Length: 278
Image (cartoon, rainbow, N blue to C red; front, side, top):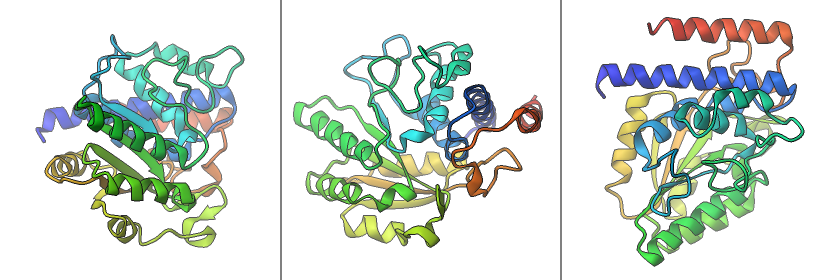
């Protein structure tokens, strides 16, 4: 990837992280850890990969994105705001009464949200349905989704995976956010789905393992996905809470909002990271 463009993407990912922290702090609730871990993936999808237009969010020819791990909505909202679907100022209304930005994505009211999600396992299932529709009607759009590693404990995920391979949905790409932490602890402690790659392979998917914070790796994986005639699972090794030192690799930040003091520390770190690009 050209160095200047890579730097631009890194700056956007940093702005996405700032938006995540601003929103969750203002709401005094939300899920920062697993939102921060997918900033690079969302940035690459929305600013490089997907065929989308913020001025035509319902264009039937657009690519679709489904946030299967719907509790990471702050990351999706921050990305959509940065991409121009709505004003970044609206991020401060997260989870407030009367706000469009609910705790989980709402496709009826938020421009750019293609599917309402929250119940784990249902997002990947609807993404499969979208990909099947695209194939059936010859619409030629691609479908992307992000699952959490804890979400893989849901049986519905594997029903969807089996169906996607059976229908040869080569227009479907699923990222697995493998940050190794879920609400109750490590995935190894709770109910490990490892080895994730072998499980998806057993269900008939093509699997690529990457560093989920490396734009070159994301780019290469998505390029490889286009050469494969089957659904693709990109297993992205990530750091929960990425970008905020005291949140990184800490399960306590799965669903906890920073207080005012913690907010100042987090924003100081993220703004310093952003300034370093200038």
